Amino acid sequence: MAQYKCKVCGYVYDEEKGEARKDIAPGTLWADVPEGFKCPSCGAPKRMFKEI
Image (tube, rainbow, N blue to C red; front, top):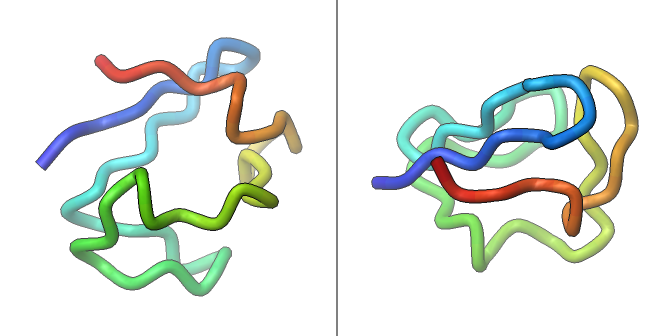
C-alpha cells in the first residue's frame, strides 16, 4: 500500500489506514479516492498530493 503527501501542509494519506474524517475506508487505494477529496488538514485538492 502507498502513501500520498499533501504538498501544502504535509498531511499524509495512507491507503492502509484510509481517512475516517472523510468516510474513506481502510484499504482504499488513492486511485479510488473521489476526485473531490480535499485534504482533511488544510483543504487542498487531491491534485496537490504526491506519492511518497
